[in-house]
Length: 388
Ligand SMILES: Cc1cc2nc3c(=O)[nH]c(=O)nc-3n(C[C@H](O)[C@H](O)[C@H](O)COP(=O)(O)OP(=O)(O)OC[C@H]3O[C@@H](n4cnc5c(N)ncnc54)[C@H](O)[C@@H]3O)c2cc1C
Image (cartoon, rainbow, N blue to C red):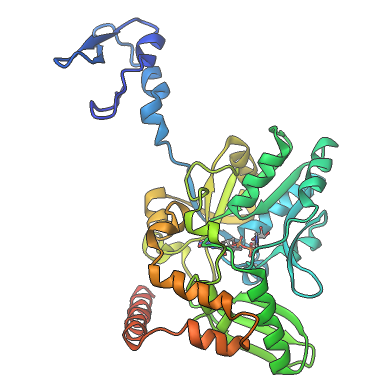
């Protein structure tokens, strides 16, 4: 039996009111504020006072897990450990429908739905562009109203939007959100695709933002063209990934995102498990590990269903989040004034300059910053080789 400490106890009297043996009294301290006092001779240690305390339970964090899909082929095509595919399969096996983000024929990122296991492949792989929701909220509601099981996946603000649109809870809806760095501009993405098409003299056939060949970290951009040429570049070299990771083509609302919190609107949150090599080395092989947070009993129930298809290890949430601060911290805090200026300029010249010139002008860092980054990369490589 534990009470909130004096700094946090609000004197709400819930513990006093619920105690089945009336062994808790609310007594004033020397300032005159009421605090619970317990008569240990009458206490039966039922613990109900601790379980309902709104202060202690506010900090109840979702359970966290490191997850690796047993199917190595699917994991190699997924961004982290391939958790999304197993969740989606489980819903489709229950005659359900799955919503997620895919490319259309022109490599515009759009939301869509599938109801076959083979269909899930179009959603695999993070597309670092804000996707177009289109009619999918309406399609989702139609299916929910007909009693079909639905898994809707997206970035946290899309899940927030869906819940706002639906205006009620559905037992047959399961929402999966991602820990999201930010959503980049679809127009910047289009300019990049046009630039790449022109440079190679051919249309892209497939695009992978986070190719794992040869490793998950660091990953690279990979584009296969219709003329069978292939472009690959590390994330710190590719012009698009540089604009994304340097946060200068991000939507304005991402700078003060309200959805970066552990009080998620989704049932399950999935992410890259950064720092897994330190937290749980047996779950690290540099081929991708997912971080999974279970935010609701519904999410927990689905997770129990997929246990045979994955390697799973329970982890401390605090440790996992320490390496993925985007789960909780608003970018506003981190965003620098100088970046705002660069962002403004990038969009001002987006229609004027060729993509490569634009990026060179507004993305490249000073020699000092580049030197600092090189040192960090080397340190990371040394750390990983020691762990191996
Ligand atoms: C814009 C964006 C920013 C991200 N930022 C981070 C981050 O800062 N930290 C972190 O740990 N992880 C981040 N992720 C999530 C991460 O990249 C993986 O999606 C996650 O680890 C799931 O891995 P998986 O192996 O199960 O993936 P996959 O099978 O590759 O996951 C695919 C899932 O991502 C969804 N998806 C793909 N592109 C989009 C999109 N444009 N919009 C909405 N949903 C999309 C699909 O619908 C599907 O649900 C981000 C993802 C996106 C799309």
